[in-house]
Amino acid sequence: MPKSKIISSIIALVLGLCVVVFTIAYFSINGKHNREGYTFEGDFFNGTATLIGMENPNEVVKIPQTISFLKVKKLGGEEKIGGILFSTTFEGMFEGNTTVKEIIIPNGVELVNDNAIKCCPNLEKITMPDTLTNIEIDDCDSLDKIDLPATVTNFSILRCKNLKEVNISNGNTIIEDFCFEGCDKLEDLELPKRINEISDNAFARCYSLKNIKIPDNVLSIGSTAFQSCSSLRMIDLPNELTEIGSNAFQWCTSLQCIDIPSKVKSIECWTFNSCESLETVNLPESLTKINDGAFLDCVSLERINVYDECDYIADNAFDGCDKLTICGIKGSYVEQYANEHDIPFEELNNIVD
Image (tube, rainbow, N blue to C red):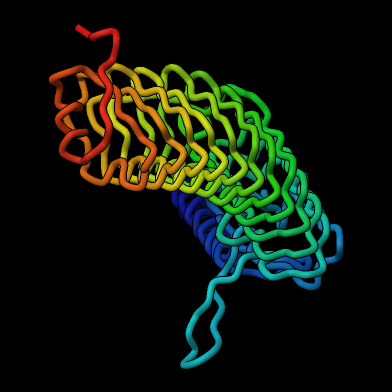
């Protein structure tokens, strides 16, 4: 047999063996597996694993950096079959666990979501690595402090009813989305400069929130962002703010005064609805619209200046504000509105050109 054919045959054999080895490795690593007390899903091509379950965890859990030679990149959950007609339910890695008190997440892990840390009533501490970008924590009532690394860009900490202290490291990455909804005991918070907007529901039902420092570069406040923050008395809004979402301060029953920045053009629906302690609102001269229920049932509001740029005020914008006098430019739409809705009107001393 010619030498060239022998070499070709050897090459073909080696390639064939490589394909067999690759196939065996692919099917042995990809998919769901149980190793070292963990259930995980492997990604052979990327060399990473997602931990989705754990057998009989101790009070302190130290997540491994690797499992079966794969780097642990994510903590998540899995679908489980059971119940009526073999229906499926989704369960996070530690969801419903009553044993774990501390979770140590190693470097390399980037994502913690899919209910991985949910309804853990005895969880007291989570150590997070500098590689983490996304994390979700839900209904962990024993957590009272959280330190978030500078790499985090998305986080959701929901209904952690005893959370009192949150430290968010400054860094170069923008925080795109965040939420502390239902964290009843959170009183004070300083947001880092890498936040450009306050997300929808960000602090909704944070009943104890008294003080919050918003960075100067924040451009928008989302819908229901501070809804039912019943301990919030004052808040300084940044000058660059352009938008305040609907219901943003609804039921903030202790809020006493607020200055709306000049770049905000509209007060959206129900923004200050039922802020029963609100006495002073300073609107910008450039404001053009006051929408449905914007100041509904603000029973302590006595005076508000509305300037000539405003060309729309909803019929129910000031319903229930029985002490209110509207101040505006004589002969303007604002005076006409006040007269049509039986609201006392006073002429502003300084007419705006």
